[in-house]
Length: 232
Image 1 (tube, rainbow, N blue to C red):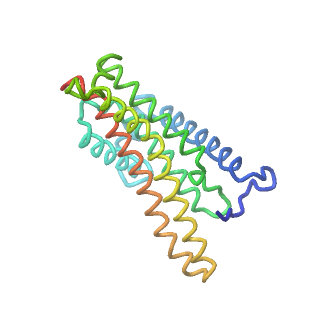
Image 2 (tube, rainbow, N blue to C red; image 1 turned 90 degrees about the horizontal axis):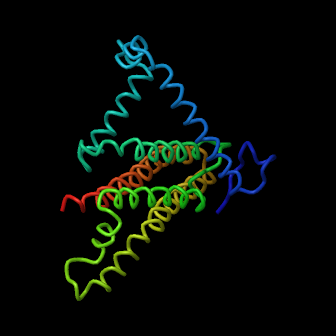
């Protein structure tokens, strides 16, 4: 895959290392921004000022964004499980920012490297399995993989464990190939004519949003599947 110029090419020559550094820097920026927001709404006066704005601003936009995400999250997993929204929302915000950042000339396309995507997928994998064990107990959680028929339990257990483990691979490959293909298409059209390249940025923005959205939606579904067994 053709690698485009980045601002840190003179410092870090390896494209994958550039993406790793960019991912770490992006996470640092997100953490600082989250801390700053928490600081600004730490008092009753500031909460009244920033959380109940009197006119449209960046604050109201993000308020709408968070409210829309929470409604979507509740629609899949229920209001009672909103406690997981901070995790799934963090994944969505990171992937969305990483995808959009890759569209800006001079910045590394973070999610076009397997190592970053696998890292995020492994974190999601560990998290939803942890929640499943916490909700059902270790025996109860793995007992679910065996199915209701005792004679078929060894076969079903093996298939279920294998398919569950594959989620790390499918989460990674879906994100990697779609974003990589998006950048290839943009590069091809840009080589034909700059105007075509500009037009493909709209498509690129849509693909960037959808891939972050799909990754996050699947994570929410996996959490639901892992935690609902106790209720059954």
